[in-house]
Image (cartoon, rainbow, N blue to C red; front, side, top):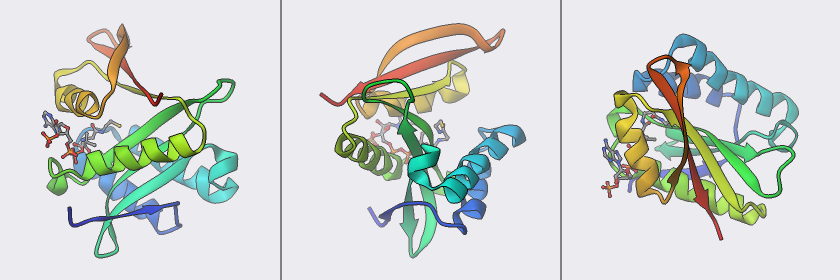
Length: 161
Ligand SMILES: CC(C)(COP(=O)(O)OP(=O)(O)OC[C@H]1O[C@@H](n2cnc3c(N)ncnc32)[C@H](O)[C@@H]1OP(=O)(O)O)[C@@H](O)C(=O)NCCC(=O)NCCS
């Protein structure tokens, strides 16, 4: 895999995150804004205080994907995987799997026991659901009509025990 992994977020990642999220064609402009807001929060408060940790996959110093995750307040060992995105031109070549593995290792080191991730039930997200299953997640719940009448929320969980 011709990419290297780098933990931690930097000011220049703001632009990279916007570019990566937009490249997928999966997310609305408001979702794009939310992705950048998490970067801003981590940059201004620090990753620990904000609760948003980042790992980037880079090729020749250029981000080609990233994962954002953090502990869920009020739980013992539950973490959320908030975003995982691979540049559209680099999908299907192991970058996402490498990012998810690095995320799971980081959560384990932090004493985490479980990782939760939400996604959509729409057909467009069927490869995303297949990706989570391939990374060891199982479907824990399905909330029909959550995002819209025809768009449910699927919650996946991976146990690190
Ligand atoms: C989901 C995503 C992060 C996966 O990253 P990726 O680099 O494309 O995935 P990988 O190449 O590491 O694939 C790992 C495994 O997932 C499964 N998988 C990946 N893409 C798949 C697809 N299109 N269809 C079916 N299974 C797929 C495969 O089992 C694959 O293993 P294999 O290549 O050994 O068969 C990436 O495709 C992406 O950014 N998608 C759009 C945005 C998105 O949905 N993000 C998640 C919601 S926040």
